[in-house]
Image (cartoon, rainbow, N blue to C red; front, side, top):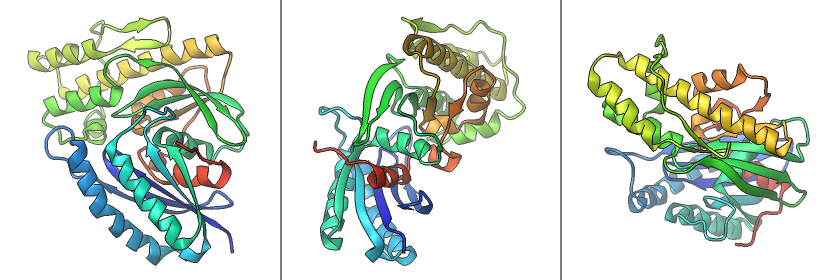
Length: 313
């Protein structure tokens, strides 16, 4: 029987448990999206929901796999590969994973949430990428990363991205203004079908080639909404188009600066079909995780536990 590798991720909006085998097959991909009332979720509320979700998911896990086959339990214990990086939600997953590893008497490994997203993209990549760029775009992050895929762990350097808001935040804020339930991305993508991009000279701010300020875009698109002159599907598709333009510019400049052509696109916003299609029309080849693994999941963490050492933070 193949060894199994378990991953746990308790992010700002999702409780996740994933299991992969030693041949990189996904055995389990369990997720409970946290309940959000209004715009956003406070950490203390998210922690409470994770505490309640973990036993439910572990119960489902025990019905799905033979726990005796688990070789390693890995967890995302912090947002990024930085000693000062911290969010209370990840403590829930870390503690539960540690307890479970002791009960099952298996190895315990720690990774970052960001590494988990990269792992989900690397898992199905046939090539051994030694050095690559990774763009992590989500509700909490828009970061351009330089990654060295070392034998023991991923070495990640933050080299670009946004300087104020994140693109996931921007999308959600415009969505809430449209009275779309939070988180808004999937419903906005559905509404945008058939929309046409507006030729309104949308202001774009890019600094030093690989950094961008996007808070001004929030005010710009809110004014479009308030004007009443445009259909919401046209406004949304124009928002997606603008995000695609900015991301393409950041990536192109990073490719020139670092002479790297392999680019992983990860995070929840990377599941957006319009943004993916926009980027794919350029002259670069992008590597995406499967759509079901673009959003937060435990599968990428589980995979890293099968091939990397983990960290001692």
